[in-house]
Length: 457
Image (cartoon, rainbow, N blue to C red; front, side, top):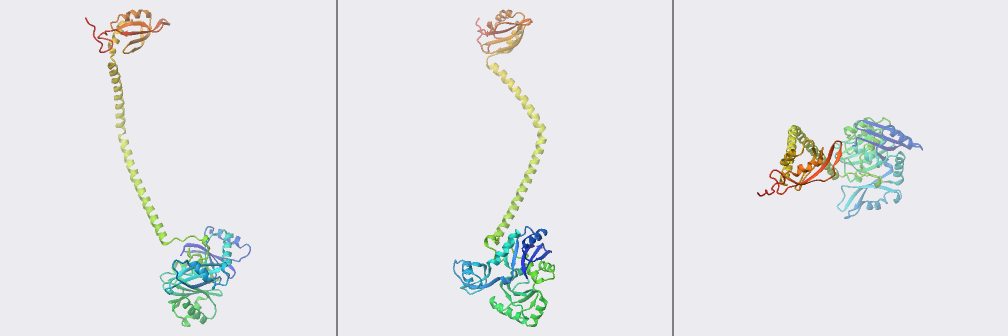
């Protein structure tokens, strides 16, 4: 049984709305139909916080035809077209205006299958759906109200074959149940008690039974009817219906006035999401989930939870590993920086060594040349730059008399062809010069290109 729901039924020209919130809270109210019925119903539902619920509609049993048909077993044949063809002979309204649903039931001969059919006039179903459209509520199902009564029973105590008599107002509905499932329903005359016993006996063959295990009586004036049936030697034990605990708690909260109709409305409100016989058009129905679908969804949910758990566990392991790595990095950071500084110093030393090696490989020995130039150049002159290569050297600097530097450098045993490469310019009290000289051949052992041949004696 659903824990919550909204049911809409009709009783003595009134609309009965029943709302159930959880196992203990129940609300039921009645409205007289008029031009403002839709607006008043919508206001009542919104005031009670029921605006989003789908609404189950329960029709009075007198508005529906319920039959058990016997059809030939045909391999691969579709059931609904066969029922639609056969149903024309059993309903009092035009075939094009039939709304019906059917379900195959157990029993019947080998070549015959028994089908339970419920049919109603199209305008009856469409009228209820139009009312919901004015409410802007979506329908959950449309079925006979008395067919929802078994949802209130205890499954264990309702096992076997039982006949349920329900009195509401001036009407009496009779259900034949097998293990809590409707096999037949009838609207029987509300007459004397012996007549009611005769109706029970007449209903058993229609359900394909010879006898029943129990007779249950509920609704208005139920206790008096039970006593009368016991006195009339009914064919089975007579008792109240075996309601389950949740159903009994909700029934105790029904209004005292017209409890028989209130019980029908309660059954519709907490009825099945997908009744066995539903007159709601196929395009408006919610697709029921099969047992295999529920199993698949359950396995998918379990797999998702396990996958999420594995992912979270893997993330926690990775997080702990990264934390350990970060701690180790922080511990080694001073040593790494020391190694980096040492590596930088080694790099500088390697570059300096490479420079010296490159100079020696180019045949230049700069230190003897530096010493010789220091001895030759007078103290009133100084050098700004000195560039040496395999061909010679170039000096740039300032002196009091730049022309005196030419003979001094030309007298060097390492240099020859000493000359100015740019005009001498006067800068304040000094002369700016640029002098180019070539290495003398053969070069002196103290200066010049390395590996130059020694001068023969």
